[in-house]
Structure formats: C-alpha cells, structure tokens
Image 1 (tube, rainbow, N blue to C red):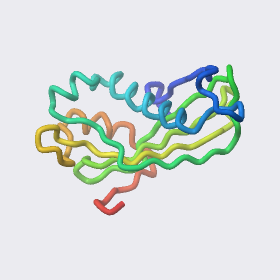
Image 2: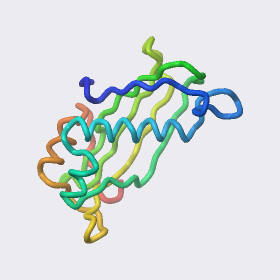
Image 3: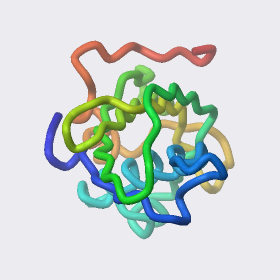
Length: 148
C-alpha cells in the first residue's frame, strides 16, 4: 500500500461509545477522512473539486468489526480502490483498520460516485481526477456496473 494511502488516528475519549470502545460512526468518519486526505495529497482538495464542478457522494457503506479498539490506541487506516466503473463515475474504496502492531480490527467498504454539481447527476470525473483514483487501484480491483 502506498504511503499516501495510509492514515493514522489516535482514539480520543469522544470517539468511544457507552461500551468503552471505538463507536461505529467513527469508523465511517475515519474512512472518509482517509479518502479526503488521499485526494488532498493528490492535488484534489475541496476547492479543486468545486472548481472542476464535481463532488464525491457515498452510495452505501459496509463495516465489518473484527476486534475492539479502546481509547488512546492508535489505528492505522490503509485505503485502496477495490472497484471502479469503466468510465470512473462509480468507485469502491476499502479501508482496512489495524493497530500499530498490524493486527486488523475492522474493514470499511464504501461504494461511492462522482456527481456533476451542475447537473446533480452521477458523471465521470475529470481525466486528472480519474488518473489519481486509478493510481490507487488494487490488483484485484473489480469493474463496477451501474447495478453493483
């Protein structure tokens, strides 16, 4: 996994639930932050996306919990593109959460798409953005169809 696709988070007290471990919504937030960090690091921050007239939208998310994560632990989120439609309009990121020791604790898979901000419809991204997303494709990346 390339360096720019890895992000580390320290679990703070406000990240935990009543059971004393990392709350479920925080996994989704860490995954979204990791994706945004990848885009920003590749030159596609919110300002550049807006100038290009596109935005990312989530179409669905799936979380698989493997181990509990507790306050003050550090989790490393590794991200990769595991699905991409032929024209690049739809994408699926997989985020693998692990302790610093390497022990895997969760997997978040996000199905998303690019929307044209003027038309308010799913649309292919600009070629430069597509190249960035394509560069993060996993070896086993699947082709997404409109029904995937």
